[in-house]
Image 1: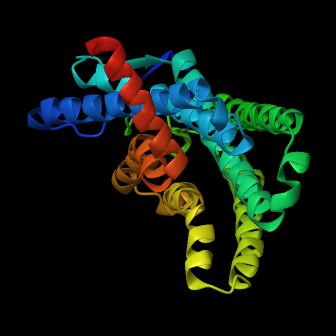
Image 2: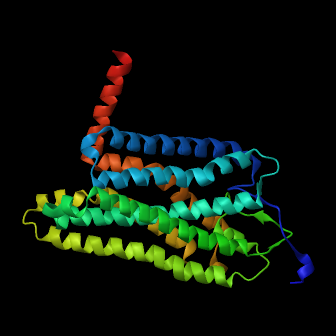
Length: 314
């Protein structure tokens, strides 16, 4: 392409999920409701864990961090998406776009690492129950959470820097509801070989490494569970992992489908739909998945609701 057609854009236009005018109000209402459920549900999990001393153990420390990450993850994209639905220009600045890309990657990878840490917690709890408190000390938990944050920011810095090196054509329309990596790479005038290479190497190591760690943890857990003589005992032990496994399956399934495919086979329409699942739907469902399948969380929530009811209606 002739260099005269290249431009250093000052802003991008986010086309959103749909360009049909009749779909804008229903989309706004649906995503506003989902965002409200996500924020309130995850805040309830955090508040419950902070207010219940018996939940101040590694498992729930990690769960509260997952809930906080879900709030930040969704807040990176949904408020802007809701704003552009009724905006006549649908504009996001170049700097704002890179910032959104950075925080989106950061919180997505942070969720990836926290899910891996939670798998390690389940492994220690089931495979080494008598040494649980000695192995997973409060200091180790803090170090693991800090490491999750540090690695997530480094990963986000790398990929945002590479996106910042791309040159964009006069057509600055992003066929997405946020500044997604692949959507930006699609409209770039320059080669995206290095970006794609880093996604499929460094990115794959980060994601598949965490997933392999989770898989290995559960392989060890399954071996221990199979040694339990009674079927009831096996089910009771393994059921403590059900919530985590459900979240892992949804998160990694959708994430892998979107990013670990050749750029040439990337479908903008399908990509938008799948992205909605892991950026909006999964964070919204996480509090319900953990509440419904976890007796401690469910019991603590009922006690908390009872205290609130007594406080307001006494």
